[in-house]
Image (cartoon, rainbow, N blue to C red; front, side):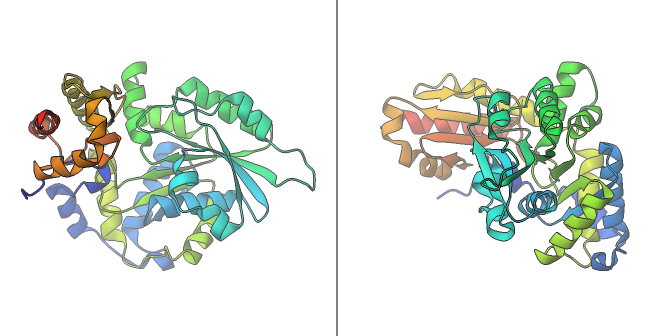
Amino acid sequence: MAAPLVDLRSDTVTRPTAAMRAAMLEAPVGDDVYGDDPSVNDLQDTLAERLGFEAALFLPTGTQSNLCGLLAHCGRGDEYIVGQQAHTYKYEGGGAAVFGSVQPQPLVNQPDGTLALADIEAAIKPDDVHFARTRLLALENTFGGRLLPFDYVQQATALAASRGLARHLDGARMFNGAVLQASRTGGTAWGEARRIAQCFDSVSVCLSKGLGAPVGSVLCGTRAFITRAHRLRKMAGGGMRQAGMLAAACRHALDHHVERLAEDHALAARLAAGLQQIEGLQVEAPQTNIVFVDLVGAARTRAEQIVPALRARGVLAAGVYQLRFVTHLDVDAQGVDHAIAAVRDVLAAA
């Protein structure tokens, strides 16, 4: 079998660039559990300031960052409102319930990833001993690569605040959304990221996806919130020692890889345009860097063979009946064109 050439399974597969590796090697380090790793402190302070928060906390993973965020807002017997397809509900092992006895109240995601305002309103429980205490609204942006409309974000978070709820954003790919939003408003990526973030009381930002760091997420909020989250990080085993080399990679990503996300979006559009010309595929036009493709007709009857056949042709993808392709900084136009040709060959094969 030929070695994979183009890995489109996820933007989590990115590898540190040469410049990022150099930044890691040169990073000053200390013991972050004691709070004296200068590179970690710099990362936390920088992202908190740029997004408009009082403080931030560096964590190993987005799952742990969201977990600490949810549990810093909610206690035993509380609940949080969340989408049925949201990462924090569906793909993070039920951590809030397992570790915090916090009940999720899942709502149906609309096709654009939003939660209907009426559904949010109806899900908020009255102050009654029969019910869990509704404490938090958790949204995700981007959602399946789709940008939540900013006016919706404002309305949903304002509704939550008016009912006394805290608001948390799983912003794993928030910067992808900010880059897209900036292209629509004429603003800057950082300016739009701050506008999005400031609708929430806390934001979890992943730096190991499109931004290309090898490891790490950052949770932002008030100082009091981050103090609670810090204790939770310790209990969850997320306290690291000389973590500055990892933090330096994340800081390099913030300084050099945010605006370039537009290149990934352009490559996703190129990939979608090519796939749309192939019979047997129904392609969803991407907004950012994720392309979803449904297999239809005869192609659907061969669904389980598609991904292995693509792998044999040097292309890695995810899914069965619906395929997912994700562009990132380790993919270029040549790789995208190779992937299109591989899909065409696979579907044309008898």
